Length: 501
Image (spheres, rainbow, N blue to C red):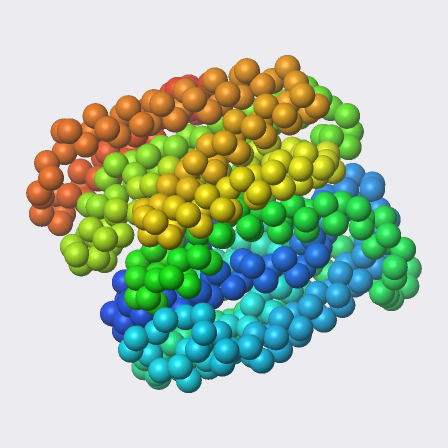
């Protein structure tokens, strides 16, 4: 019941966060201009790359909090570990903030190609970005701690409020105070500071009292350094693979052209976010089951989590890949912008689905404390794919960069799943490929393509909304029926409803 409750809470929190993140993008573009929106894309890129500096502490603290819930730590040792991680993270946050501020003028002049924005405005925005990224460093430590403690209902209550402040509050700032990119990032910094305080209080109140005041200690860090080192190496290699396209494009495209790619990437990433609520709820439970040696329970949860992810990401993602232009026109109210964005969006969506499908195998390895496989595979993939991404991006621009993302994740899904199942749940590999992944994805793709032939291309706004809503519902439903565990859950809910009636 804890996993189910956390999944529901995570979807409510993630759904609201995604809505607040996506709903106001057209407003930001109209108020700030497409070039200034490109800086928001640069902010996301900086935040992703600078997350490397957390030294693997974010996944480590989540895993150790989950181990604490089944007796892996006593209250004093887990509090000492948290305090040690807090101090290290605060130091890293200060380092990031100062580093980005010091390099902001150089980055504005030598990295970004702004046309309408002045170099001074870009530099100021970058300097503030550094402070916001630093605050989000600390925020991520507290988020991961709460996830590991399985206090995800409380976490999502905070997340929902914060998402509203970030999204709706930013619109208010731009409309009533200052329609500038600097004001936008100042507001994001204020909200991040509030978030750090709220989550910090929640984490400390969720832990039982200890015999003495928490202190910084090397001892708890020595116990987890190997896992942390593995995860930071894995994160670095993963970022080289997943962010190389944006780094390359940000240096060869104008800021306005990069904004189009960022818009498409943001839309496609919403598909990837559909798996995060499941991941957050499942990871602590996978850790517990592995710690207890319950292989049957581990396999059951592994299959269920993958199927639910495949149904949601496959159903919604493949619908978006097929009907993406219509969705973009309704969202942005700009047909020309929709055409440019959709040319890249559908490719990125397919890559996001493949990437998200590998989440459950990834978290299974993290639950087992096994990072070696992914480190080795990613090292090989970096050598193979980073040069390929560069060549495709230089030759074909945004289309080449998006295509490289699909190819990378296709190879990754095939190779890593094969190798992982040799050691973890070896008898479950066939079912994972066929029942968990292929059946729901093929069903969703076939349904979306069939509906595309039926739905008229030109409809009014309200009829189009109704047609798209119905098409989305049908696509997801067919994918759910094709997935064994999801189908069984739906039938169970229907039977229960009929009995009550």
